[in-house]
Length: 351
Image (cartoon, rainbow, N blue to C red; front, side):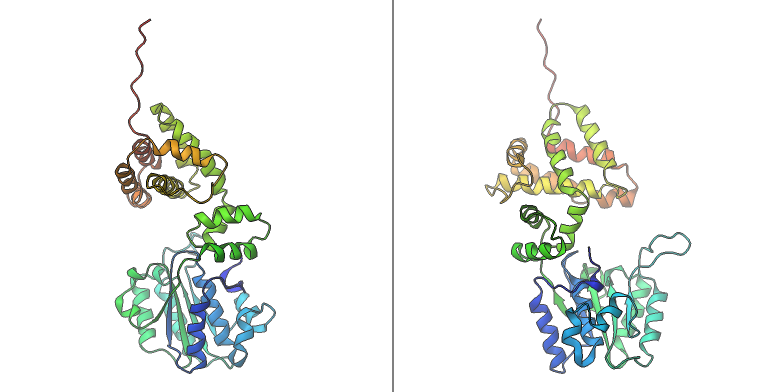
């Protein structure tokens, strides 16, 4: 998938872009903007689109979306002297990404932004993502927000604005980015993954929750194939406790180093689609041939209020496994037991 800094396309956020452009062209541009929304909806892509407009000066309209424009190329190649980016970086000792954007990064960016601009446009700071700032980093960013250098614009990308200090939120113009509608999401997939058949794009659009990034991730990870393999096993798992243990182990193993997150994501889709059936709202598309019949069989096992109880068990599961270092297979087994109900008593033979 194209990195946000190199993506020339915009899908479904034309109104947000128009708000920014009106402020820019009307001379009423706020010094800090918070682009907030769910993961993968295009927040960072839009932030870099704004950055290119600002950095290009009078040529901003073309630079925003033309990959041949010099400013576009410099941003793509991380080579523009007036663009600073705050994002998690690798720890030189371990090679793994730091868990947060560290305060030294913020201070370094602050110093660079106080220098004279190298070119004619604005200086721009992109924070991707602001909710990954540590406490010290957030305090350093707040100082920058309170006293921004002249002709400097801050673009904060944020998935969870609730974790940011109110003092930061209050100093930003907020642009909420809604999940894309089905039509916009299918159009995005046609551009981002033109090799996919139209039917596949429709299926991905239905389950991606309005996020092009999530749709591409689902496709590249083989998520649909794993879901198609899981559902019949869930139906069969009612018959014997042993199969549930095996299925829990299989789900945990298939999480690919992500603890229980990948498995929880699969099970959450099962719960959502089964609950929809329980309230008489069948999903628009089958995710694979025969899915509807399997969901009907699974839905017969529990009443709607029982499915709500299962959801309450599943929702915090991944976080609990990571925070408490639990065995993913044992944690998933509890959810599978709740989905499948009590194992049936063995039949007594009178022979």
